Amino acid sequence: MEGLIVSEIGNGLFTVKSGSNNYIVDIDREQCTCTGYFYNKTCKHIRAVMRYVARKHLNPKVEICGDCRGENG
Image (cartoon, rainbow, N blue to C red; front, side, top):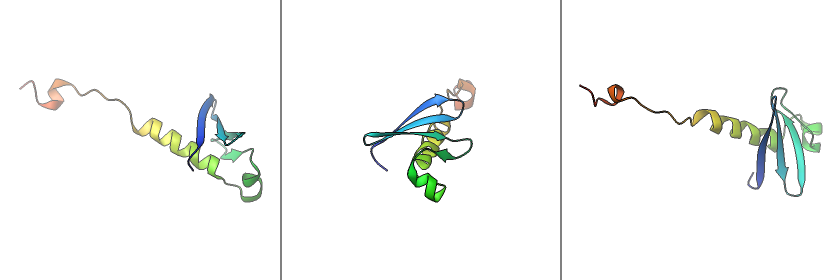
């Protein structure tokens, strides 16, 4: 699924650029505007948005305090 560019619109909506086409994905309803979704009820665009959301939420930048690192005692 290389070449897919995911952008967040807001309210659970995302645009996915695939080649020269743009699709709208509603991740809350797991729906997409592409023909693949129309026939299969799933598509690579939904999977791309799910990966985008997972990476965004599973890779937080967390600072660890000195006590947790064992530097203060």
